Length: 117
Length: 115
Image 1 (cartoon, rainbow over the protein chains, first blue to last red):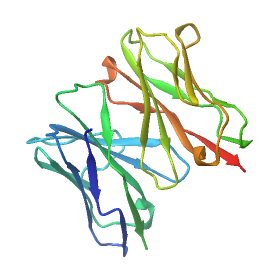
Image 2 (cartoon, one colour; image 1 turned 30 degrees about the horizontal axis):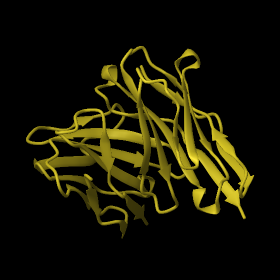
Image 3 (tube, each protein chain N blue to C red; image 1 turned 180 degrees about the vertical axis):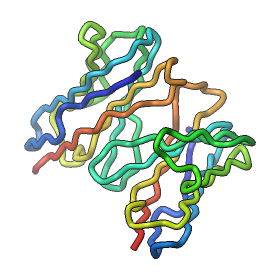
């Protein structure tokens, strides 16, 4: 089946630094990827939709200059948390649609835990 | 607008008990899809089931069963003879054409199965 990977799985950084998280589709080409954020004991909240070759679409309330998304190839989308602060500590999950399967199913990555000290 | 409500925040049962996780949804679309995911402590979402709005047949997969009722906008999930390994957070989600098929998740239900 379709597999989505994320790297790193864990990251700890100091406040003020930038952190890049990668999301890869391993055995399919993903024209659209999604980034979610999940705070402890809360649901997944969509942050943005990443489209290959074009600008990402951000959800209301998500700062695009804070969370930079780049989808430069059909198998890779990156999320960069710029000037991270402790309140950015969260679990970040990406997902991708498989074009051959259609719009209805997303495959989720294993997630990246970010801790900002 | 889409909305998914999982009213049960946490459920605690003893092993071998049956447990039902509730999910109520709202959407104006006539074509939509409902999902259940399991999120163990590791964090990775595990896909359990997808059901489209035109198929109200209940489904059973081993100890898992799902009851879809459009009349009450519910898509409940039952685990029969629960096991400790079933302990996890379970999310119900809805995707519909009006939302570009991007899923909206419920808040999740934490299931704790005690030995």
